[in-house]
Image (cartoon, rainbow, N blue to C red):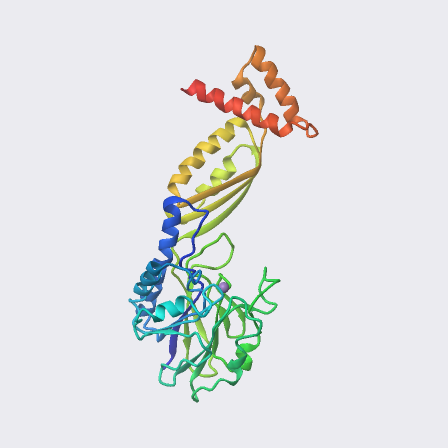
Length: 375
Ligand SMILES: [Mn+2]
């Protein structure tokens, strides 16, 4: 009979999302626990033998009591065995979320694997070998003992670890808690379930990252998934299916405005296929717009802000290029016109020390003027 389990990691429950004020931030925090409930439901529906959590279930060891209680409640839909591995964010220190959870009288189907001892709860069908982190950065490879770990004959050996596979991950030059890429082979593992990298990724033979089930940053990697793994027996290749469980889509849009209009930015937003209320968007704008288009853009972005979950706009690289029509709209004669002409000369001279100030002045003049005439 095949051994089936869900591999997940990096829930980062309790993450503050300090850049998100008000309701959007509270919703992001709350969703992380709802997604755990979803994982429990997926596990139950797929009749898996276990759910393995490969580290960083919690964002820190200081999460509130309330958060711990809510998390344990969210596990309820799955009555099979949960195995939790301490990662770098929730390392098994002398006082940690794990010691606090133990004091809460946990149900017996929840295993805290905070010591390097085989977990054998499946009548010899599978043996989970955990490599818990007992500090944020371990100097030595905690998976080394897997090679000599005992397990019943014909039991599928499954490693559970948290860290960076040496030399394989991008952006991990200074990687802590290194795991050798040949650990699965050397320790005769059927599967090595890893956490720490937030995208789902097969990184070496029989060696997988599950990715974060609920995305938490604007990064182009495969997050929002859990892995449903099936092992037919020792030696048989692993079968892995990614199951989407994430709620929010973190989307990064990088738009250069080249024709003086904001059309391309609005098109990029219109092209979103995800449910708008689930989108957490970072919009990076560059290029240039006329003053009239800048005004239209700002009005449209306010509309989008209300529609999506969160919209953050970085327009520091977007320049104003006032057109003749923009300037005509300010004033066509006299005193104001003269000032506008002087500002325009300064604004169009790349070497002028007041260039940026002149641009801002023109834009403010334009917007104030329109504000007044609209009123
Ligand atoms: Mn981590």
